[in-house]
Length: 252
Length: 252
DNA sequence: CGTTAGTTTGACCTGTATCAAAGCAGGTGG
DNA sequence: CCACCTGCTTTGATACAGGTCAAACTAACG
Image (cartoon, rainbow over all chains, first blue to last red; front, side):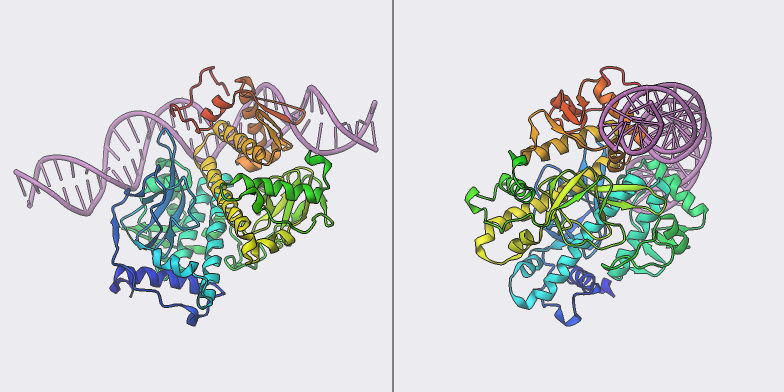
């Protein structure tokens, strides 16, 4: 479906899906943007969208592939602080300074300036859109907090499960995942830099998840074989408790 | 100086200092808020400002002491995701849902509603203030990212140094630190939950920092004995950023 | 002075890192 | 079609950072 569109159009469509998934945006509140995509960028895995020492060069909408915000330490250690999926913005408000952006897989982006312009525009015509946008920003923030908890208090095993579930959820929202599987283009090295682990340990952790029949991974397809048990491992509410929307009751 | 003011006034003064420290706010841009502080809350260390399962009950300005945003896992593990110092807001935009707020030391807060109202107000009279406010929000965000890097890629030793420097910097901005020291009211247990370590290891790490003559800590006063070397350890070194020096045979 | 919360110590254990080398594609050029 | 890269995954052996448990020490405080 998405694949048949031009990348710019596709990216916008993904963004709108995300915004529409929130409680705030009625489908008819979606404003008509200018057409996007004359300014397509393609990045090979590992390529910088902007390098560590430069300021973000505008903001971009991810059209395909995964992009990461990363910080690189003097001795080469690297921590990826956020993963941007198709439909996400890189370099916008959510992206603080001192973060490089790097393609985590082969990725396409389009210039997001028109989108930003519309969102910044004070016109009441865009009110609903802007509200949805702000909600998405809060989600981004909540995800940073999730990441902190993962890194600070979860074991490698829990961490990995937790992260894979996050990816799945987010991709579901933009329609890029099936209920039990999704395309996971990240190498174990990249996963290591996201999860704060060593490559070797990521490998062993994934093996354990497979051995215990929680996931399957073949040729880029990640299958959540047992999502419930996986969620349990990740320390998420055991009984299908809702999480994303702003009302919830975490377990005791 | 600050101590002689009523807590509400003092808190507001701290906030304004922070906002004024940014590049955007000219001193005369500071708007006169209503007087604050009829609604003072005092919390004992460990007390919830709001518990894990409730939504933030409004937003509060910290007047004194340290407050933390925390997530508690099912089995009791706890990760403090952000530390709010005097002059910071807890529960405002920067604070995402699913975070409890807890007093990390004895702390006072005042209701921040009047401040929020002024900032939300569209009046151009507050434009400069609002801009400063947004800058402060970006700082908060950058701090979350710092925290992620700390937890993901720094050793316990580096992490601790890095965090203490952050505290010092932030307290300097609001005038609550001297150039080489500040009052650090956090217990090692709390530090552990911030740094993602065990209590015992925090203790040993602090000992190491003292043994190597980087810091001193007596009766709540934390002294940065050798800020430069400390910054180096924390990986904020402008100079050679190599592996850990081990100049004095660090033993475990 | 006993109580209590916090810090410190020691002994021991384990999760994760490190090092090194071996398998395993998917692509390339000969 | 094969030999050969090259980048990724997997494996094994070993080392260490940091966790856990338990107890002793310290200092504030009623």
